[in-house]
Length: 275
Image (cartoon, rainbow, N blue to C red; front, side, top):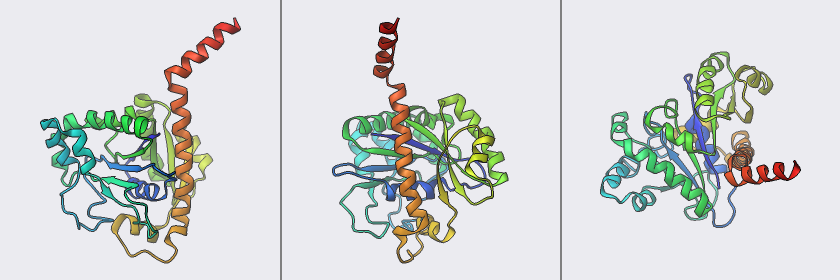
């Protein structure tokens, strides 16, 4: 299925909150799973946000570095996943919306050098062989440095921005750098400011793939574990996240189809026959 990386920029655009909203809203057919991997080198936001620190540091990326040294990475990966099915207040199918928590201390990132490539390969394998979708939260800095390989290996990279002047100015350089590194970057807009999608596209010169509303009260449910209001699943934020999930899947599938060598060979054959 799809591997989609979300990246941020300065100005607190809300990458992790958006990622959790997408995880809990992702369209899942029977037998499919959705995995959100927190790969932000600045540390996990979900463990002490949505989950309120209830799990300590028993799960997460830090444990995978130990497993990688022991040659037990693949088995350890599945043991590190936390089931978030039902965190949106709905009845849940067992273990179909899963979280790989990030590190609990930015200093732990130094030990993850070998893990990033293994994760990139793991995510590609999961998407290709298991029919699962993977959403990678790269935070503000994770699309660069050693963990940048996760962005390079994703089906598509989407930069989360707010449509305010300050955030758009900060996003310009980030989008340009990612375009050079991975190509074909898209944008997910948090609609806090005055600029419409067309203006965001004009400024950043990349397409707006989806838009989420600026909804601080609903966002705090996902970012800080605040009490869910009534009909949270029908809130504008979660409704937009369901639409955004479908649009991200469509973009990932389209880009994967364009880059698939088999499609390129087929296209080349059609050109040859047309000559």
